Image (cartoon, rainbow, N blue to C red; front, side, top):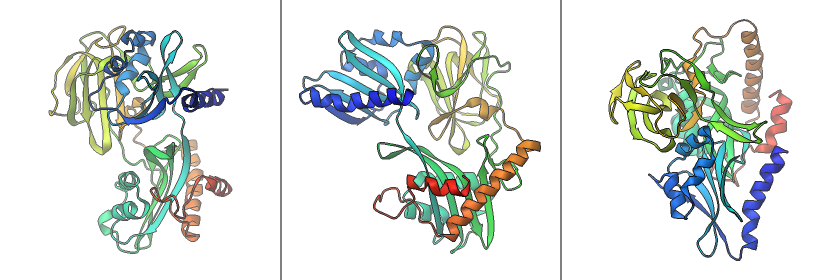
Length: 401
């Protein structure tokens, strides 16, 4: 039923132009610095439309990102008929005209998530060769990131091999978000180095030792969660899609807020529904966000250490009471903050370790087959090249994927 509902949304959006005497669909980039209220004003849409959203949905207005592509349908007389504006990777605002005026709702983004492979022999360097051969800079960066704690890339020589199996979301033929590496292997002088992504979404080496540890402290001394993180969820009672791209902590106004890790303040000021906000850039593409503050203590450009007081809990922006909305982003993608703050440092044990060993054997078998059969890599900007495409799903299934 949910997929049928989504198909009807897409069919409505794509088919309506044929019956509107020349109405056109535009594929545009969201202008830098443009806020949602100004976008509504541009087309004469009442700003009070935002008040029809609940508090969590109102917050999502601040998740509209500059330079992100969106769609709008414009009638020949310049009237806005519909817009599809992404908020994160999973959801989007659907603004549309009805006989009773405009309506605003949140619906899922239609995308496909498929599995692809890359395998090659090094000619220059792993980073350079992935970009040149596969035409995917994000994949090259992610490969280096997940392997950097277990591989000395300075020792890589010409002829060494690498292999990657990863998932990638696709929307209208274009990749969205970062590639999700499931297993990666770098062979150096005949010695193979693996990293595996386990079911807990963390990376481990062959011994089950966790890699890329992210030691972040709590943003508040006393944690009381009032709203959890979710990318997309169909609310069974409200009968609509919901998203909340952060974790809310209830606290008294004026409670100190701490930087969860060292980094550089890249934003300090007002940000729409989030009110007074601070954003801090950390290592490895992580950004932390602290919203609804009553008072900001640090300015853009300042460097902070883990545990520094950066501001104080408040209720600014679209908020119904004092609380901290805490968000974590990895390469621009919202992830569950509690997964980052609560890191396990002892590795895997017991039944969890046994499950990992079983999963690891499957991963290694797939990598061996890819190299043995010399499977071609997927080329991202050359669709006519030999490649591994979604039809390979049966191949992976037969291997036990």
